[in-house]
Image (cartoon, rainbow, N blue to C red):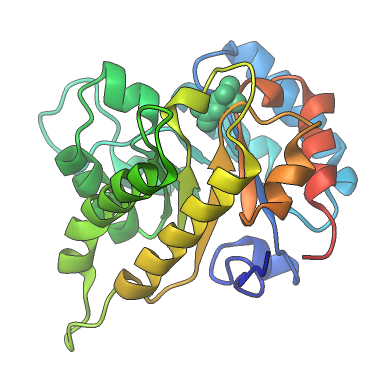
Length: 276
Ligand code: PGA
């Protein structure tokens, strides 16, 4: 399959400030699996083994309360970190929410928005997702916009559901951040294609499905977006299927359970560290 990857993958994201030639992205989404202490150990070990990550753009999204730790442990490294969610207002009477302003202050480069678990369990609908994406961009960070069809259905139906989610997710940002000429935003974004049925499953989605949906997402982004973008795949990624998924046509991988064991995570990163 012919990949039309941006070169490097996301020019405006901080990887390129210190390193050129990042073409693949691999992210770890820790969800709520690790304790604070376990997260610290994981981050320190990742930092210690950074030379094994090669030329891959690596990011980690730990639990909110460990983000300040990530900032100090990953200082002066090429590993980016971010949050798993944000609220869409910067300040105010929103008890319990986390402001994108604070995430920016803590040095986050990325914020995950609209993960399937948040959509299913925490009332995250397209409208909330869109407001959050706009808030992340307004505060100078890159959204990792998660999209994916709910059921294992035909490729055509999956593409239609996912493309709608991308359009809806970016809608507010396109309106809010368009320049004076009405040109779409030029900020970097990552779209994570995560079929809901392949998350937390025994196996990920088939490579052909991943490639077809990723191409459809790229087509939508080229209509809507001017900035660099990358399309990554998430859903039961393991070191065994990482290479096949990348060959299927995504710019990178987003790893849940398999990221918790650092050896496994680094094996996935190493699978991504080869010429495109
Ligand atoms: P999983 O999670 O790798 O544990 O399936 C993936 C995700 O939700 O991003």
